[in-house]
Every structure is written in structure tokens, then in C-alpha cells.
Length: 98
Image 1 (cartoon, helix red, strand yellow):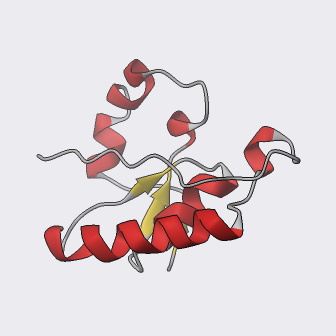
Image 2 (image 1 turned 135 degrees about the vertical axis):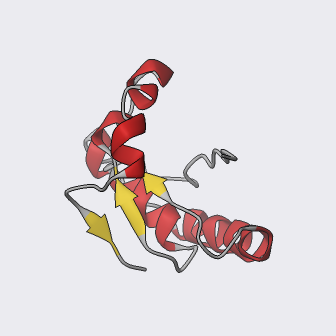
């Protein structure tokens, strides 16, 4: 399994942390990175995103389905993600479509 980590693009500072949206510049950053990344990703890639607004907005730029994973919330540890390995192979309660 390959793992690609993609940090969210530029986000506003005015909202509570989980509700911070991408700025106009952040949307452009996410779009440019998605344009570069998409042709390099396999068609069956599994995209996981934090439920933080800025994170799933960044994931949406790929134009692929993505899963929201609470263990990826801001401040979560790498150990939290590793504990979700079984769920990664299975499924998630909330999914998004690009």
C-alpha cells in the first residue's frame, strides 16, 4: 500500500477550527495540486480526509470520491490513524462525492 499525505490548502482564520474554509487562494492551490497529483494516482485510490471543512474541501479538488475519517481530525496522532486500518479496508459511515 502506498500512502500519500496531502496537507490542506490555505484556509481562513476567522471560524472555529473544524469549520475553517479554504480561501480563494486555497481553492486555487488545491486545484493546482489536484491537477498535478491526479494523473499520478491509480484509478482505484482510496482518498481519506479529515472532517475539518478545509480538509474535505481540499480532497474535493481531486474530483474523486473520498471518505471522512474522524481519526484524522486536527490534533489527532498518527497512532489514531493506524488504529483505523481495519476500517480503511472496510468502509466508513460518511462519504463525500466530488
